[in-house]
Every structure is written in structure tokens, then in C-alpha cells.
Length: 115
Length: 118
Image 1 (cartoon, chains in turn green, red):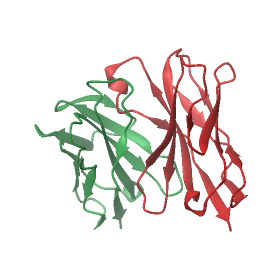
Image 2 (cartoon, rainbow over the protein chains, first blue to last red):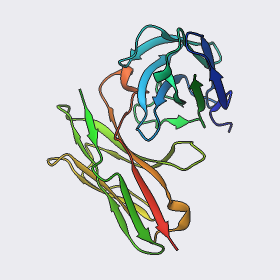
Image 3 (cartoon, chains in turn orange, green):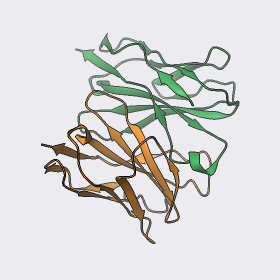
Image 4 (cartoon, rainbow over the protein chains, first blue to last red):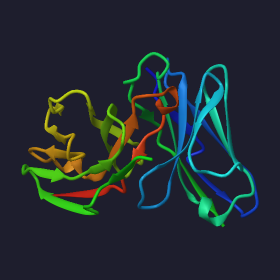
């Protein structure tokens, strides 16, 4: 069983640029969610995708957007990067469509640094 | 909105001893799930243990157990026979059980750094 994989591992961008982070969900999982984790803090929910549609969103501005593909992999896009966007971005997948109680499985994250 | 509070920024324990990490939460919902996740320096969030709110029996997973007090909205994690590999940041998390939009949404606490001394 393949776990959740994220790419790239690390990324450095300049303020104002755009970035795309990628996530491959665990086999059999149709729900993907994204989290932002600032240094020393708990992860904050950005949004989730279920069967290619966004169906839940946290308190993040529209410049945070995403996609989910037919194979349930996902992208997180951030436009007009700000210094405060520097964080660890975690992707998690679950088989939410088949079980309310399916736990989230997380990837190793992408460390984004905005200078 | 739900909130999760971990009041212990740091905890330490001697190897082979027992340590308890605290977590409280606030919610108006009657059915939900609670989780403890471990995040080592490798950054991957690893599920340690989970509890369903409608189950009164406390969950256990080997050396890990919880003390779930629904009325007090408390969910503490006990680690017995602590090992060096238990050293990590531990997060308490809440998930609603009511809607499809809650499948992937966890509300996390601020975390507790656990140090294990040999």
C-alpha cells in the first residue's frame, strides 16, 4: 500500500510569486485535505477535496486554491505569495466517502519559504 | 466553531516512566472523533490513537491510552513505559462526525513537545 507522497520537499519563492504543491493520495482514498503548519504551531485546515470538488474550506483567502484529479491526486496553488505564507504544507488523504471514521493519513509535507 | 487546547507546551519523561499529555476541547456537537497525532522531526503526522465520542470506553493502543471525559471535554494521552522513540511533538485533534465536509477537517491543538531522557 503506497502512502501519501508530497512534492517538492522544500521550496523557496519570492514574495509575489505563485507556487504549486503536489500530493498523491494513498491508494483507495478519495478525499484529500491540505493544511498549513507554521513553525511551532498546530496545522490549520485550508480545504478539502472529495471526488474532484472542493467541499470544505478553512479561513484562508481565495489566493489559496486547489485541484483534485480523477486519480485523486491533488494540487495546492498559492498566488501572490506573502512572507506569512512561509510554513510546512501538509497533505492528508482518507477514504471519507466510505467511512466516517476513516483516519487521515498524512504526507511528509512541503516546506515553503517565502523571501 | 470547535477549539482544541493543549496547555502544556513542553513535557519531559524518563525512559520507562509514564507521562500524561493534556488536551481540552470545546464543541456544541454531541458526536465527534478525537485523535492524538505524533509528529517527529521527519515532519510526518502519525496517528497514535483515536476515540469516538459515543463510546464511553477509553481507547488503548499498546503503550498508549486515553482518558476521555466527555462531560469535562477532556482527552488526555497516557504513554506508559516511555521509549526514546516517543520523543516528538504531540497534537490533539478534533473532527466532527456530522457532515461530509468534515471528512478531512481536523482542528488541532497547539502541540506538546515531549522529551524522553535516557
